[in-house]
Image 1: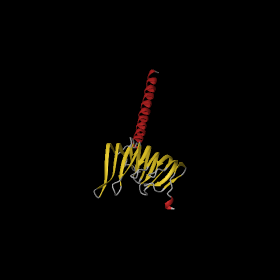
Image 2: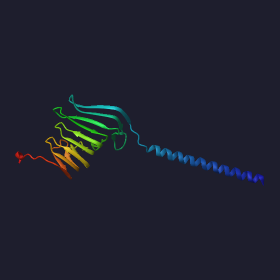
Image 3: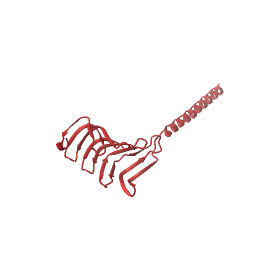
Image 4: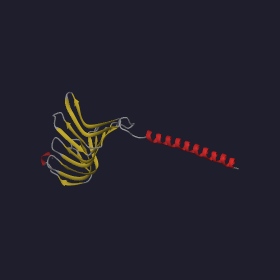
Amino acid sequence: MWLTYKYILRGIVAILFATMLFSCQNGLNEARKFDGNRVEPLTIGEGVNLFYTDSGKVKANLRSPKMLDFTNQQFAYREFPNGVEVDFFNEKQEKTTIVADYGIVYNQTDLIDLRGNVKVVTSDTTILNAQQLYWDQARSWVFTDKKYNIQMNNGALNDGEGFDANENFDKFISRSNIGVQYLDESEQ
């Protein structure tokens, strides 16, 4: 009888051991799958200060404490999680500055998403403040669905929610706003 219990006990232990072994293997495979789906940046840049030049002239200068490069992903992008500041220079070397708490650049669509205390100061002194701003580089168009305020170079003020504009802000379409506008009657 003791011999029978001994074989039964050994059988139970063997079954438990085999079950644990296979369950651990399954857990390891699941962990590997999870790790394989993890999105990691290709590179991480600290204290980034990039210049873009064309024909020997500086066209843009981008500064950021940190840049995460995800161009290794199917939908490539670069992320600026700790803020970004960019100076753009036109043909006359006049500067427009954009500052935001967060930024992401989508390579395939040429779309830039800026978030948190976005401020744009153009070379003609137009000042735009928004919580989020999209910039379509391919179409030279900026837009948002969030609240914003803008002070045009002629002194006009506009507080609203949602707008579309060209990047020079001389074509500005607001969805809803309150403000003070100045009209030049000589242009009519």
